[in-house]
Length: 357
Image (cartoon, rainbow, N blue to C red; front, side, top):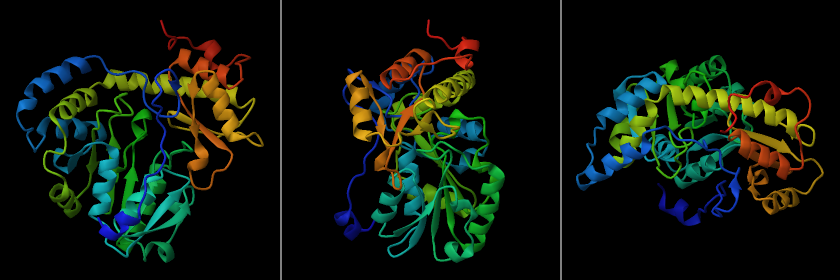
């Protein structure tokens, strides 16, 4: 990182509610965790008197199977954001430029600046169509798939064409797939392009954001660069062991995807009675509250025990909130807190297999 840029930098806002009395819809994490996590953590904690194996063979194998690559391509990191930083550290130098989507995850621009580079903002839904006039001067381009906070995911074919243009321009393409595990879409690792680095997070899909486990995937010489730059012992034993266990829970992942899809459809159709809701493939929904006061919408929800995300902190949004998709009973509490009620023969009236017992 660039010392001068660090001194001029700052933090950026995120979701996540510290008041445990509130039901937190501001952070997009799974409300459920896989069975066996406690046992995996306890066993790893007992082994934590020794340093972890820095090769992380079990974790790499599980991650590789999960996204469809070779274990040697996997660089373990303490969370998806650490994978993003690792990719940027190996791609950017002070004075470089990077294409950054908006509205999107605020950490992209912050991390670019911490490297002493300059973000060039492009609308997230236009970024994959840019040509060499924008790509040639840039050392890095970032795509969020699905995009946070809008929730839509660029198709792999479109991304493949963009990756080819990035390769021609000598531009690294960083694809953040923090929420892709909630979908059945194929990972960008399938492109097998040396221009592409994929960042993955385990902790959202498996409901363990405090665990801090993730990984980066690359091909060719870029794999070696990530491996050399990665911090030694980048995952503690508990994170590596629990992460390995979670990545192998195929039934849990399948059930999560089905529940999120069903509940998202139900929530969307209900919220549309009051807000403009963006189409989403992710475990969250972006809502335009129109001429209502965003701070009042957030305060009213808090008064009813619900924390939602102020999305006006995202570049380009000025009348928006974001809400997570959780389990059925929690989602019902959110809808009630926002003053909307499900009516008609919606998906929730037809499908009940995801009801809480």
